[in-house]
Every structure is written in structure tokens, then in C-alpha cells.
Length: 616
Image (cartoon, rainbow, N blue to C red; front, side, top):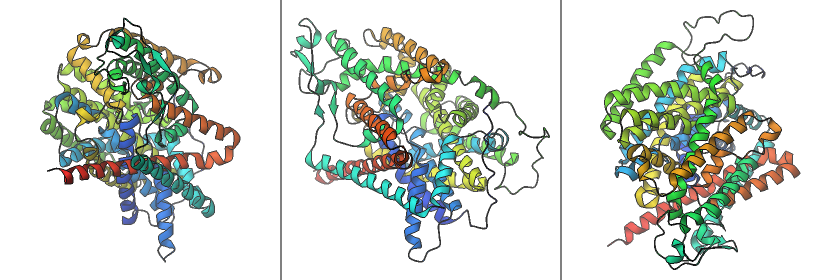
């Protein structure tokens, strides 16, 4: 059945305050460009990106509040809404392939893109999602009145900080405190060469096992990644994702790195590499563990997506607004910024279709008809993803990508570019479409003009494409040697690459016993996804998250431990200080993520520049 209508107060009448201003757009572009680096950094570390709307609202408010103290014009709520719309579009550029399909293609084929080509590609992916959102806004926001919970949270934050000055300043201060503390810790870790501290246990190996034959009698906790890391990023991520995900990550890492990895090493199912008892065993362990982990993530995502069949059906069914049953009045001569006009949508659709097909053909040598089919399929799947996100606050980007990877494996067997890059369009466009729909819900709450938000979304995506592509190329100039390592686990890259390899090479290319592990992992993902969708709410909270369990298989154990500890801390604070937690926890954690991410990007760039200047 369709989502229940959102019974919220009617939006205020649009005031005479200016809405579409250059300072609103430029502020959003600047923040979107900077926050895109945060999401790329976090995405390469843990495979997730963060919605940056609330962060952008608070930073934009703080910046222009300071400027107002010097006699400037106040930054009104409508300008801040456009700022957060542009910033969230820019920050979401990581979903356009920079932490998944693009590096996976480089690792499989060696193909890398120049900065202009990569920026053009990621921007084109975002444009597809923006155009889809432009076409479905009236149906999903005005007619179906879907909640889009993330957008509602942003709207409430906007209204709070623009009506309660002292409370707003307190949240700004908390954001800055988190950012400064995290940046300081990251710099200290870098300058003092702080290392993760291993937990005090070890795993003994059988004398006849492959590890013992390599001259190693036991694996320490540090070998397996069971350590405490001296940075704040994953602790902050854990505080945001909550206890169910945190506990699931901990269970997954115990199973993967505490049980299955030693078994794989013992039996020689994965290449052990040099015989060194002090080194990290993450990379050789990942070569085997990624298969059951990816299988669990893929099957759970597709199973959860299948449970959204009612939302999928409602996507293609027009409904009248609740009320007297009368058909809505026809949209005729209405200002373009206030409502949807079909002819603009059709023209935009043709333009983005042509751009995407041209770039897929030019950059990746994808057959034009296959590229066109991929974009047309993307239009449908992005609509589905937006509706699911509107009802559940979860955008099934991974499931969308895997569906198209499967489709193009059949259409272009053995070819990695169509498998990855056509699916890249689907996943990235779905993410961008859902981001904009949440922003449009925010605009609806405050009475903003949606057409202006589309303008902000385009400019924000442009800034994110330019800054994010540059940041990605600086951070990972050589994906083949840098990714799927302790420093850059890149779990989304591992997932996309593994699926593409499987479709290219078949099951015969899998490591020993990996097929059996994939089967078990895939079945576990299905069972857990079914349980979390069908059990009563009280019992459901005890079901581990299959996506989080699978993720723990492909990231270092210390990342999962940090996320678990962060989730525990957040849960304790929620129980003891609920009011403080409701106001400040997410803001503090977001500041910590931004502070460490931007500092990490800066240190990486500094290292690259130092290497260039010291080269003979």
C-alpha cells in the first residue's frame, strides 16, 4: 500500500524575502565542493556517504551570521534552503561513481580518466537524476505527499535556527568543536606516527596448516586487524548509524576476521604473501572474504528492494490528492519556478540522454544503443529509488546498480565497461534524484519555490563534480595499488569489482571454497532481510543488519570495532541525556567527520606535493 499522507502544517505563504540569490548559490557550491571531499574520503574508508544537508544549513547560517555582524544583509531561510540544496548535491557526487564504479574499472582494465573527463562524466550522471526528480516532483510531493523523512529533518532544522538564535549558535559551536577536535587528532596521529593498538589475544595455527608452513605459528590480534585506531572518523560514523548497525558490524567482524579468515589462512584458500608475523593480513584475507561478504550485501539489498513492491507499483500509478476526490486542476500558465511543466521535462530528458550516451560512447566505447537503453532504464529505476527513499528514508543505490550490472552482463558478456559504467549511471542518478526529492520536501515545508531548487541542484552538482573529481584523482592516482588496502579499504569498489569479475570470468576464477562461502553468505543475506521485513518491531531490533554484516567482511576489523564503540557511546548518551543527544549528537559527529576527512585530504595532498618536489 502507499505511504500515508504526511499530516503536517501547511507551508507558510511565500514571503517577500529574496530566494534565488548569487550568494545562496555560491555558498552552496563552495560547501558542496568541500563536503564532496568528505564523502569521497569516508566512502573510500567505509563505503558509505553522509547526507550533508543539515551540516550545510548550520555552516551557511554561521558564516552569514558573522557577516551580518559587520552590517551585511541577513541570510534568510529561503537562501539557506538553496544553500543546503546545492551543498547536498555537491556532497553526493561520491555516489556518481567516484568510490565505486570508476576505481573498479581502473582496477580491472587500467583505464583512468583525466580531470575534465571525470568531472564531465560525474556531472552527467547527476544531471540524469536531477531531470528525473524534476519530472516526478509534483506527483510525489504534491499528490502522493510522501514524507521524505530526511528532508523533513532538514526543514525542521532550518526553521529552528532561523527562529531561535541562541539555540542555533549552540549547534554551530558544537559542529565547530567536533571539526576542530577531529582535525587536531588527525594531525597529531600524522605528526607523531600513531599506530593502532592491537588487542591482547592471538589465534594459534595448526602445525600442518599453510600458515605454519610459511613459518608463522600464530596470528596476533594486530595481524587480523583487531585493534583500536587513534582517529575519530569511524567512532563518529558509528554514533550516527546507531546501535543495531554497530552491533551488526561487530558480529560480522568477529565472524569474518576472528573465525573465517584464520580458517582460510590455515587451509591455504588465499595467498598468504611474505612470511612476516608482524604484518597486517587484511589484503590476503580480503581476497577470500570479499566473496561471501559481497554475496550477503547484494542478496540482502535485492531482497529488501523486492519487499518495496508496493512502492514500485505506486511509482507507475497516478493518484489524486486526498480530499473531495476532484481531479487536480490542470497546470497551464504557471510560473516555471513554482510547478512542473511537461515540455521542459521532455526537452531536458532528451538533452541528458544525448549527453550521457555521447560520454559513454566516447569515454568507455560502449555501444550507443546499449548506452541509450541504460539511461532509459535509469529513468525508471531512479523513480523507484526516489519513492522507496521517500517512504523509508533509505535509497537503494546498491540494489539499483546491481540490477543494471546483471542486465548488462547479459547484453555485453565479458565486457567490464558496460557492466560497470552503465550501472554507474543508474546508481549515481538514483542517489542524486533521491537527494533532490528530500531537498524539495524541505522546500515544501517552508514555502520555497521548487524551480529555484533545481537551479541550485545543477550548480551544486557542477561544483561537486569539479572538486570531487580533482580530490579523487589526488587521493588515489593509482587505484590498483592503493585501493583494497588497510589505508583505503574501499568496500564499495570491492563489491562492484567483484560482481563485474564474476560476470566476466565465471565461477571458475573464484578462490578455493569461495563459491560455497558465497552460497552461504547469499542465503544468509536473504534470510536476514526477510526477517527484518516480516518480524514484529520488538523482535526485529534483535535481527542483525545483513548489509552491515556483509560490510564487516570487506573492511578492516579496527574500522568495525571503532564504529561499534561509537554506536555504543551514542546509545549510552541517548539513554542518559536524551535532550542533549537529540540536539547535538548528530551535529557533533558530523563535525568530526568533516574535520578528519578534510584534514586527511589535506595531508594526502601535502604528501603528493612533497613527493613531487623531492623527486630528482
